Length: 272
Image (cartoon, rainbow, N blue to C red; front, side, top):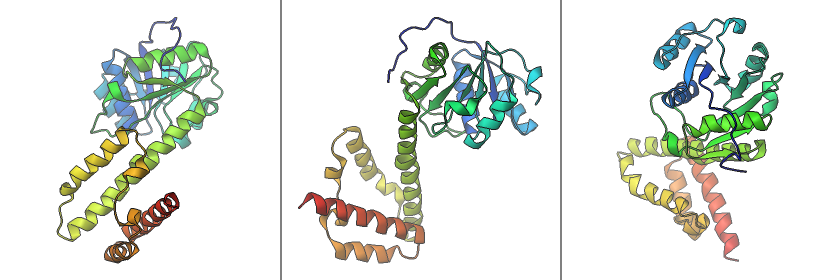
């Protein structure tokens, strides 16, 4: 794994076609345009969605027939994982063009039959209305061969200072970790906030303790040693009492029981 290519022998491509109009297309498209890349067209299932994004990026919506598309060094498939293969097969193979998708769990084989292809995946939670901190957002790059990899690396380095060349297993591991640490945590916070508001509480008061948890994570210490609360102390009576208090909210009750049991087991094993 490397954060820098050994050599980049080509100038960064200036022309880009975007396929897709969701959160990923909006955010990556805007980041690339702001870095100096020219978007020469946008294709989406809905013409209205393609027009909206094209207007945002200063370009035009494209015809569904890819043989009519303008020349571009890169085509970015900013589509769902399930649509990557179908989109790739509909796009004609052009010798000077690199086809790229932005899936954390995807593979290069999804871009068949294009021999010049690659992956540019941002480790970020992308939403249209909220731009990530692009200079500090990790971008994972994989190419079908060294020349393609070098060109994608240069493209990535235009928008981020954290560019990582890595093959599928490393990227997949980071994607799964992002899902479990960010998405699962957000769901837990949403359920907790909903329950607390129903009890007349204020979720904002949880901010200091949540900041402390993030601080513990950033220190890269043994996080299990930082665990507090009744489950880590083996206080089963309090665990049962609290579980009964959230019982009327099934999702939160299930999460409370699962995490409490796992924490109890973890800390009981370390005290033996």
